Image (cartoon, rainbow, N blue to C red; front, side, top):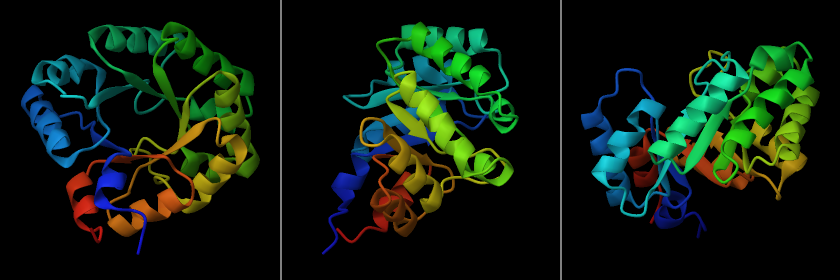
Length: 226
């Protein structure tokens, strides 16, 4: 019998809506669905945090994003975006690194980027989105390792695989295993991007992920045995 019950997996999910066309009505529906599904959190765009708060999360954590999805914002902009979102009611921030800087080997720029957001929201759970598929494709495993270590050194609580918007792809078992081996268990790993089935979700959890970013949450949970 699998340990990955519907209730357990739900408790590890960020139920996500980051489509640019999302409305306040959509976010309200997301929060209501999150409550019904028993997930850990909802993840919405910064401008949608007030809508999530107004709906009433009933214990569901509100996560948001910064520098999303490209990561090409200036560090100061990401920091300010995170600050405003937390002031509006966000409990967690998922920030996107400058992937190009990492690919070019400018790890000091990556470090400054993460440290700027960390300093802006020191008491908020910070997840660092590394776009693992792009880093593996364009720069190799060592770059992914280096970026994860920088995030850990900057006191991020999580490293996160993907935005789900990059053409290189989303989460993979290979990336999660490498990220866990690099920074776990002190820093947790969130697998996100392209996880649409129960089998894919369980594979990420078996690889060591402790949080899942899902938009097809209901379908994933319905695929579990019990």
